[in-house]
Amino acid sequence: MARANSKATSVNPFIQIAVLTCLLGITLNAPLVLGRAYAQETSNPLELNEADPLLPETFNPPELEKLEQALETLNTQAATELSEGNGDDAFEIWFRELRLRRAMGRIEEIKALGRIGEIAWRENRTPDVKIITKRLLAIQEELEEEGGENQETLSVLAQAYEQVRALKQAAEIYQRILANARQARDRATIERALKVLGRLYLDWFEYSSAATVYEELLELATAEFDDFNTTHYLEQLAYIYDRATQPEKAIDIKLALIAAYQKKEETTKQLATQISLGNDYTALDRAETASQTYQETFTLAWAQKQFTYASESLQRLAELYEKYNQFDYALQVYQEQTKVQTIADDRYGLMNTYDRIGLIYLEQRDYDRALDSFQFGLQLAQALSYREAYFETQVERTIQGID
Image (cartoon, rainbow, N blue to C red):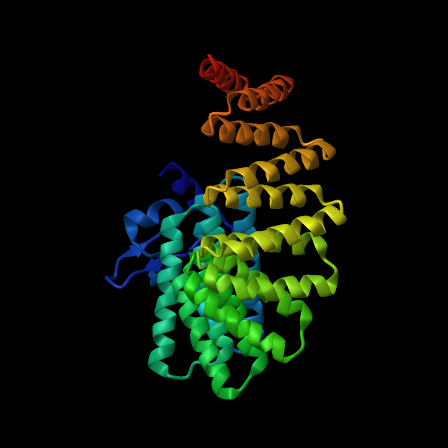
């Protein structure tokens, strides 16, 4: 309360509130310190009913311009308070600005609610975010009751919901914007709304809804021969189907994506996508197609001296053979992988490959070859100071098998 009393002596016209008359007829002569005291005085500082000396008696253009200047000054003062670590004082001022913003019209108020709400969210002021979100919901209800909503108001409201991280409400508004745009055959607005909805659904991990949106965006881009966005939406869909563990849907998307990368000569992206495609075939037990995909990937990667992808494609191929208990083929592939890793000076990868080779030989009770593999792995582990104890244990275990 000491701070509140000290502020009562301030003469700053933008901070001090004059004599207030409440609905109950109680007259107060001290300003409200909303940031700290609103939880005690009221649950919602946006619903206070005091007169404000900045509010003009008439709302003609000159008076509104004067009010706008005053509101900008309040915003500057609040930002200064926040930068100095006075968060409560800052939001006291910002809540005053928000009350006054109603006089500037609904769109201006919504924009201010979004701006200040985003600051509150960044500052972890959860009660303030809830207060601002509640006001946005009230405005939405007013719009629905009036039945006079327009695309501009809806767009501003949706953006404000995003700023306060009310993503469900934002998506609902964007769906209405999308429906209105479809009715008006407004292609540009349809595309903008779909892009935002796709992003929101991904933020929620709503992969099914996101896929529906990006499939439509892909159709639009393809119809317009928009190669850039076609590739982008294919990438988004490939990501979505991977995250949703839907390899059967991912395959066609990745085949189209590989073709796009080939056309653009983006070999690195092509190789990564081909390996991912092979993984999808593996997940669906399409072993022959998976094997062919990995082998084609290795051939291209080797030709392009992309040794990381060459090594990974061989590893996936060897693991595929292991999955179907074709250990001799797996060993051949792993041996080829060691050659690639040696050329690439990938000592960590080489160490792990010798481990896999040793484990297969150990399973086959070929202890001499297993020992050779684990000893190679141990030498690398010692040079790297990594997994030394593991390889020492494997060497001892293998020697015991020989004995």
